[in-house]
Length: 325
Image (cartoon, rainbow, N blue to C red):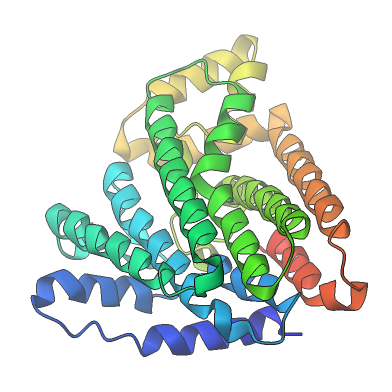
């Protein structure tokens, strides 16, 4: 069975050999740039590892895996514009290094390229793969729309937030698991269990991101710690804090939510973090992460293959949730 690190080597080699040396360079150079930054590459990795549960030939799932990775990076180009994010994976975002129009257009081409790679999936599974991929692509846009709408609302519920991150983040990981399983030869029941596994791992992964944005190590995290606090982003932690804060805590939280003075950014991060600590929202977030991890484990346990074949994907999911970056 391939380990996560071994699948990353296969994926990295494939991505390095994609020829982006095309004209106009101003369109393709940003694509080459963003893919060269690496990242965790979770989505293509789970695609290959899910395939490997049922087949020794993981390369048959490579085209689908690359398609998912290109699509994921396309969404980041557009998300970074909407969020006005300047740093991604420790490097300038495409819209910052070039400009907004370049990031939009290069992202559009990446979406087209992602579909081209997906059409190279095994022909016997192609129709169902493209149907799932198209459904997932639309869901990601739905999730992003909810995310933008939440910026203007003060009454976002926890359930609404969970649904938003399911659409925006979890469904692409889940799709990778199901597509890989299909290509490897899984039946619909096992493929569905792997989709559920990926969906719950994706939810736990995003909640972990919320946590690390406040409590992580900036050098490891690849972007500024406290960024969500500075832009009042409706994260799992902030939504809970807004619901739980009373009296002086509520007054202090409202003060900092209204504070847009960039000269007080460090004070804002420190003050809101201290509020989170007083309200124990870190503990609540960690409990939610464990809840979705447990659900993922339960779905994975229903996949009808010998346990010895499950070891690498299980180790990967454990590593993903124990990360500090």
